[in-house]
Image (cartoon, rainbow, N blue to C red; front, side, top):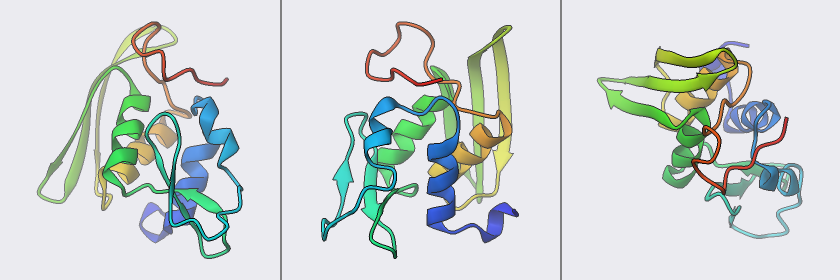
Length: 138
């Protein structure tokens, strides 16, 4: 699927289905919104009702963007610059520290983070012991 044709619900589905998502997201994926205007999970991510009444990750909300940036790794920065989101820094890969430098034309920092995580086949997450709130699943 081309990334420029994805809906907010598509981005949410991709973000929540990648390996390395926080455990607390499992309670929200597919949960009924029941007229709630929004919800937050313990990691700080914001959730909103979709058109079908189920919660989806609010990819474009600043709080969620911060969570998604953290899920890319402990030493990652995401900068907006003339319509580009530049994701750069160091993250812990299976074979040691790896340099990350990706550019994305996505409309938001959150969407850029998801696009990069998708290329990496999952959320690399924080390195061990850096943040006790980001216990991730395999």
